[in-house]
Length: 130
Image 1: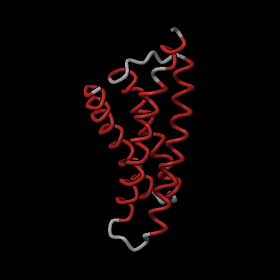
Image 2: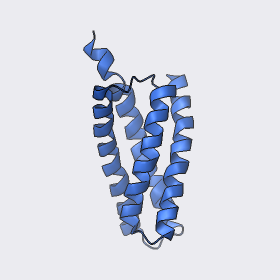
Image 3: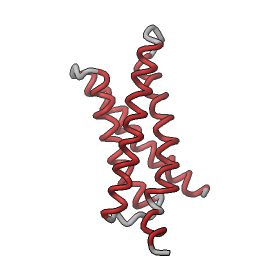
Image 4: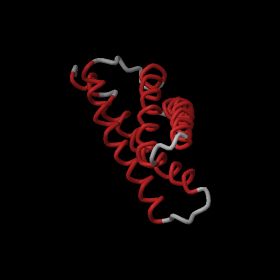
């Protein structure tokens, strides 16, 4: 389990760089904040899914696994965009608002994502074979 957490964290750093970087690019291009957060989450999560499927969970990228991953990412996407909006709307005068809202939303989505991937996404095909 410790190795999974370390690998998940390292992969998460790469995904987070893709997520955060693409958000700032979209914001600088004038994309509305909610759309930038949604788009950046999709980019970062796609990178993280494929890296985690190879390095963290030894996934098989089967149709079933991809469907479970898609459901997991919809849940996490909803949490990420929702928490980001909640922070921005409840604390609009907070210094570094977009960074704080991204960190808060990323933390909630990352913890949820790890639990879903570890307990369901990458276990589903193995559970069905027992």
